[in-house]
Image (cartoon, rainbow over all chains, first blue to last red; front, side, top):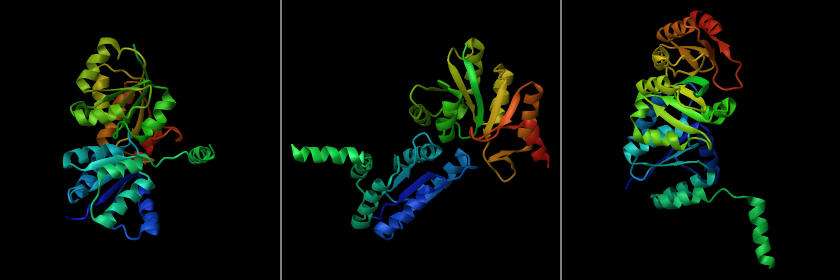
Length: 138
Length: 163
């Protein structure tokens, strides 16, 4: 099986900076690609660009977008549905780390685990730590 | 009858700028999108409906239905943000009876033959022709992408275009 790829769709292309920063933690992530949504581009133009790239993505590849309700997600959703590619909005670092780790070590990607990791990664740090300390005391 | 609190021409229709800025700015509680292609696309329409902020109702109408609904009861009630993808749609529904007093041009996309007139807003000759006819009908036209921009009037924009 060809290694799955990750396609990032973000406003202004901040996904590219995320990819660069991930290299610091994880080494090469050459299977991650970014298509920035630039201000002057229409939905149709952006859609065409993303669709062209998505056409060459192997099975089990994923599309990550930044915000639900944004053009990045709107375009990603249409393409994901047409090409049978899973799309996750709400891109964050833990989501990326999980997906990249899986692809790096197994050459495969378990969508449910990746989604779960992304969803559980937003944490009220002080609140959670305090709660955890309280449990130990009692 | 509903109050049209903002009439915006934006090729991206509902997207980041509209959701985070213009809905709050205009205090709209309804978004009426006029788009034949979106009205006919069940899946994409559902995404737009799902992405509506809390307390805001999103509807999508074809150009024909928009004109029909307006002429029946002016969209019913509420504070409406009317959203259209291009000036051709705007001109058609205006001539059909949706006589808005103000139009905000927020984005018309880009193409090699189009000229940038303000921020990322572009125009071509066909657009200018439509804008002139709307202005002659008494519509106030401004160009503005986000609320933080100083709105530009059509007169200023036209000078830039002809430069």
